[in-house]
Structures are given as structure tokens and as C-alpha cells.
Length: 106
Image (tube, rainbow, N blue to C red; front, side):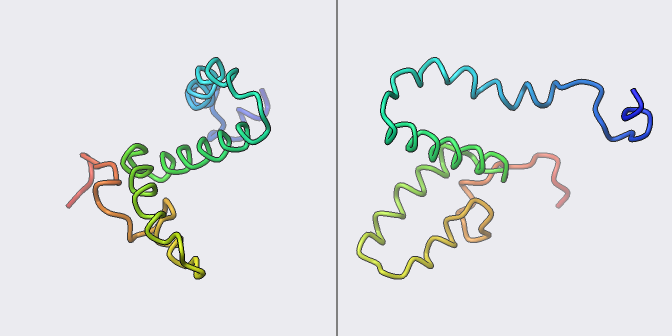
């Protein structure tokens, strides 16, 4: 109780944490089909990309579609600097990848 009394920023419940983990727990039923190390690594990469995109205010489907469209265009490149423009926090991402903030003051 002392922690809650000393720091007003500490939440009394764990609802935010449970909400964040809900999608992960629902997905684990589907992950039983992943029975190889390579499959597990691939799933971890996809999960990391989608959660990072979501945390950065992107539309996950549009962002992944953008990645899958742009990365093959650079298949023969030896310079990987183009990846900087594809990061979820890049200001160079197309507007269609960003969630609209209806409360944004213009």
C-alpha cells in the first residue's frame, strides 16, 4: 500500500497490462501450429513489427502492406539506408499508414 500512497502515478489495477496482453494470449492458440525454431523466430519478428507499429500510432495493416511493397524494390541494394524511411517512427512514411487523431487540434 505504501507504493500507492507515495506515488500517485502508480495504477491501482492492472487493466492496461491485461488489455495489452489480450491479443497475445488469444494468438497463442494459433501458434501451436508453429513447431520449428525458424517459424517461432518469424512469428516473433512479425509480432514485434506489428506491436511497434501500433505503439507508434500506425495502422498496422497499411504499414505492413507498405513494408511488403517497398522492401522488394531494394532487393539488389547493398546500401540499407532506405530502411530508415521504413521504421515505424519515420516521418517519411505515407499518411495512409498513420492513424487519424480525431482529437488533434489543427
